[in-house]
Length: 283
Ligand code: ATP
Image (cartoon, rainbow, N blue to C red):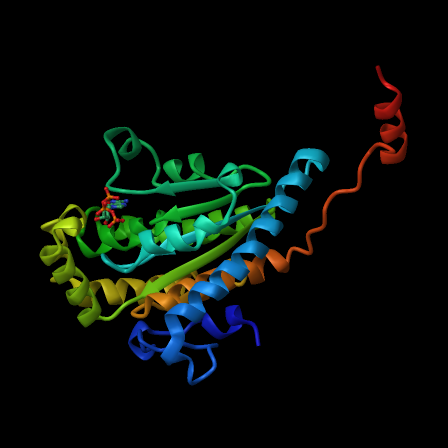
């Protein structure tokens, strides 16, 4: 069974029903050497990712192929988005990679519809994109913190579904991932940021305030799963308390989606033999 089928969230999926420490798709008995196993596997998968990415790029460059891939990462604070970008997205060739992060909107961004900054950051044809946070913030933090009236955010689920269907129709493969960590794991990671001087820089006092809204966030995540895990762009919930599992799972999800594109290196629009002869005879 494909991991994307195993982790796919559908109507009725609730984060509360998924154990953040679970490791779906991994053979039981892995836990002894799990970290080392995952490092090796991710490196192997990474070689495939880079090869698929090159084919994607080559087809866009030589044949006008419009296809592109976008990994959308959503997670609570300390959910492991940065670690996933480093360990998984780091397997791709940086030349063909577009990484975008979305913080609180700037004045200019607020003056536009919420998808404006998202459209501007989409990967071009042939590229792999990664969104560290995304348009889903506009129905997560915005909903939980009441940053706009309910009637405004409530319309956004539909707007997002239409937008993503349009993207899927234009050759963009969306790989939407929610990194699912437990309340206890978030506490442990925040505590680490407060006890290791080399991690102070990662700490933001606002994270403790956000943590106070944990239940509201879980509800808001359930709502995006219920409303926006569509056929064209389903969500995948990756249990993420165990970093080794998270890295393996996200890398595997990407490989499955790229493999599903049936990519090949493009045929040349010249005769390589003739060109070789020209090379030999050219002065
Ligand atoms: P991260 O936690 O993702 O590593 P960070 O703590 O370094 O990021 P930024 O990337 O600057 O901080 O901003 C992230 C913050 O921006 C989060 O608190 C997030 O909720 C907030 N944010 C993102 N999108 C929006 C939005 N559309 N409206 C309001 N706040 C948003």
